[in-house]
Image (cartoon, rainbow, N blue to C red):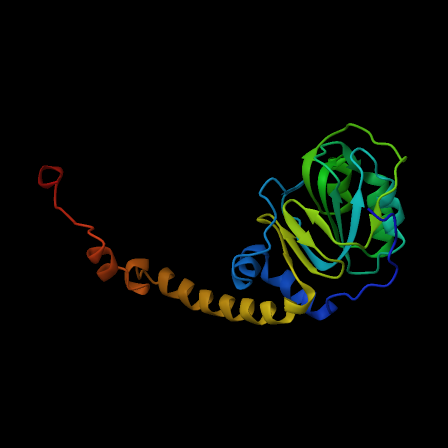
Length: 230
């Protein structure tokens, strides 16, 4: 592993990242061909948080948040900080002070495949975090990692500048070069879902809207009028 900091990265366009963020994780995940979703243990530390933006990445050592401090300097307004670790870790590597520093840089959220602490304060200041665990266990600043290199976070490869979307449904990553296409597909999907929502709200059944009855019959589903007929 090279212990480097890459200063200049190509980011997903801000407008595209904002469009993806407005769509939400579930719609973006579907629009991206059901790809890019981090493992479900990545949960928001407080409910209702939502964020989307280009990734600034950190490769950190377990129980060591030194490189997160290094990464703060490389962040720009609208960025999402994404932290992967060289091995499994649950220590509380991020808390109130780092969040204060990131907010001052205009960072919109953090995704960290490790632990987070100071949940009450982070909720109060409105800084959203998605983490592997919540832990008060402290960390050190002793071993180098890297900033703005490709990392694996919760099972997903993240390249600096990729679009990251996070909300109560989890975290999804879209490669920078695919972001605009996925945003367009997601917006079309959302419009289609709104039409379906109106039909379902009017009382129409999904069985009929999706033309399921014939395929169900061909698959062998049989309706009977009472348990005695079963």
